[in-house]
Length: 584
Ligand code: ATP
Image (cartoon, rainbow, N blue to C red; front, side, top):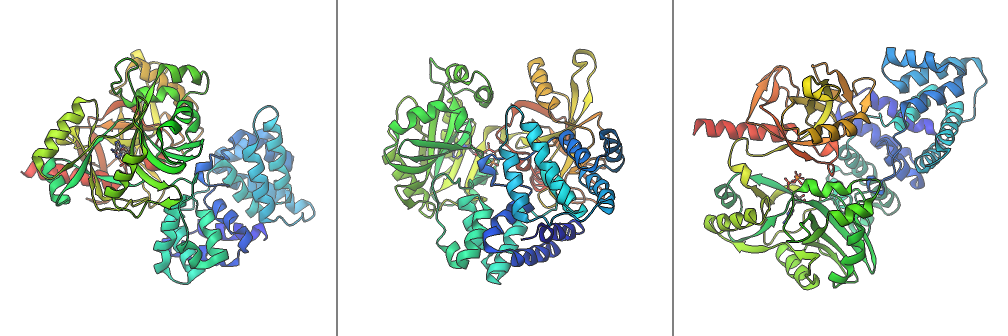
């Protein structure tokens, strides 16, 4: 398939933000794509080469791309940098520079999609000595044969700046329409995605076997399942209103969620955002098989740091000491953990997602042999407010965050948030009701004690409709000296020359960052703001939400991606709830 088929579609997609139009363009593209190329097209339109959980990233630095453009065009690096500073889009800059060149040389070889894909995949796997030079050679060899439009999109994919607004939702609509002619089949497509986390694979099955293939689509070991998520409630009363009858109350532990896949002695761990985190937990790989009485299984557990002497739970931050590149063996010894199982998704060849909570939990209890390292999260059946209060109290006293309340006859709804699971934290019972997870997008230089560091950070929420990061507040409190140093180090690697176009801000920060780092923030109130862009126009025209007296809790949510940050709707719900209390 010619790469121009894809780049022409991408060009059309860039000109619209309307979901229906985007879907139509995608449907047309999918129909034109041969069966054996479809997964590649699906990855590329999302700016990737493989599904997220494989951890293969392109993320090529701007500098390297500038060098490659210079090599292919013969134009100096300085001139390219100047053009880029003027235009602000390196993809476009590269395209226009190379356009001038193609006008003066003979037409180059037609470039195929397979060639572009294979080259990008090779680039993503290069590492170590000499890899930068190899990457540059690969890039400039593609640029030598690409037309200006192709160049623009190759560069955008390489740089990770291809933002077309084709979220996974739009792609699933398009796949359902293109392969089954019915948008209603979208739910089946989504189910397949929820259990595989791999839209490329789903597309390939649709192309080769049609909707029947998707119906047969099963959970498979070592492909992560998208996690089921909980709605939050503020009080025992609210929980009782939402779930009638009896339900299960489990302790809510403050650690890292891990989806553990096991086949004999092979163990892989995936995080909440489906990243492969096995390397941080060599002790789990070594020890957990002894505690699991099954040859094969997919389990969910909360991994929690514990005090080596008492076995008591320690806060989440302790666990994050393991997220280091060097001397990991030492961190494993210094920060011991326990693995606390709470769900069973697959067991010896059988899918458990459609089974009830009750059945999953009962089977889990027969499989896990508890010891000092592997545990079952404590669970009790509750039926009224008093039962919940008592267990909530016990859970807080044992160092947990609160409770997870689960409907007994509910299946595991992969990839969805709903009332079948509720979370009740103690802190929900006062002030805002919950903390928010916000993305650091910019900073203002510090004074006094903070000179030379970032004194105040500019934070954003996430807007999944537009795939952007609208600002919500500046935060300067809650930082210990140690945390300031740590944040400075992390953020120094994320500085960008310009504001990333996905950041929506009317403020001018002293310095801008790639929107990647997520922090946990509490605040005393949500107010309406003419400055900040979160939830713009939701309550009043040209007005967004801001946080009053925001404070960093000390938790860096390194297990969350920026796209997992709190969204405008969540802020709106908290805003409405606080209004109610005002009126009460
Ligand atoms: P969410 O996952 O709902 O988007 P979040 O990542 O901010 O939000 P929390 O609000 O703290 O997390 O609540 C859900 C998380 O609680 C789960 O993702 C899981 O890591 C953790 N957890 C702890 N104990 C349990 C339990 N017993 N059952 C399910 N999840 C639990």
